[in-house]
Length: 485
Ligand SMILES: *Cc1c(COP(=O)(O)O)cnc(C)c1O
Image (tube, rainbow, N blue to C red):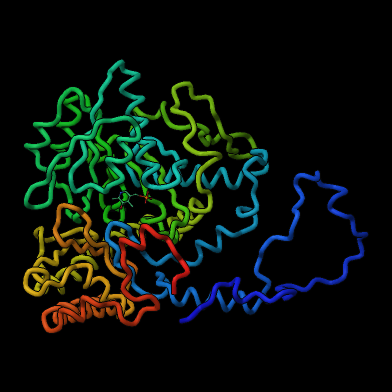
């Protein structure tokens, strides 16, 4: 557990490669590169052998927690197991070695993949068109809101407010503010759903749109969604869906059918790409017919010809909001999502959501006696517990119990989110965990609740078996020292 920095493993002259003698004449760099681009001194790189490099990083990966090692019940993040075939397809040289400036004629396969993925996402959303450009969920939100803004502007209407429900993910108000809107919060009621009376009060002629997550971030389905859509549309406003929770809806219902005008996906969540360590994301945006003219350019188009279909990128969209990213989005994530969808097919995608919902409700039924349940059952693909009982009776906080889970080889769930639940613990098992794993997780969390009663000080000192023990989180976030152990 005492892993050194790779620089400390360095020994002068040691190499990780060995090449055969080449028979080309050696040319001094000075003769081919301009003087100002030449280094004065060699770069300070570690000098290590291949086996030292491999072992160093394998040891580090063993100290870390990852979804290939154990369950990751991180609510709202859909940390499902990522099938390895996704990485295989995305590293095929025809995809991995493409250059974004390559002519379209030599990148037909990539363009076709983008076209077909957009079509599949369009169908899953029940909408009119999709852009694949946004690089993450929050970037998709910004794109969607800019589309809404352009729509109102093109109708000669200046609306300045955006409504956001108080259970929403923090990125919702942040994206709306970034697009220049004033945020108005709408509250939710005792069963965790949008409060229709509060919505009616706040929905005035200055409201551009309502942003909603369905199922929302306490895991509850907004069953009044049609009434909400009618209220919003009667007011001339648009309805935005944060689609990060699509893992509950695939093949069961579609945002377009519920009355949403625009939504973003999180491909890295619902359609499986490793994420969470700052890895690449993708947040495609699906829109209804009236927002299509404003979509970002370039758009991938398909043309039927005598020799079959060809694909091209067009920028000829005079009303477009413009580009949202350089080139075409995080292409590797698109390949992974495409592979995942094609592997499962329509029927398989439907079973993903059914199993995600069954897993969440099973786990909830095993845990509800040990913790407070802020909102009534049933839930969709995730659920929210509260650690209030343990805090009041024993002074043990949700943070302490989450840390203690690490000792048992589980990642902690999402905690203290959503903000409207005190001592929140938000759990999303996903469809990829077997019943046996769910049972061990439930037994572990119940055991921790018992420990909290029997020996509160011990739980407050957890974790005790991890490479790094309890950190001072305030100091850690202010003084980022990643080599402190
Ligand atoms: C993850 C998430 C987002 C933001 O997505 P990023 O890809 O992390 O930018 C937005 N809303 C909800 C509900 C989420 O779970």
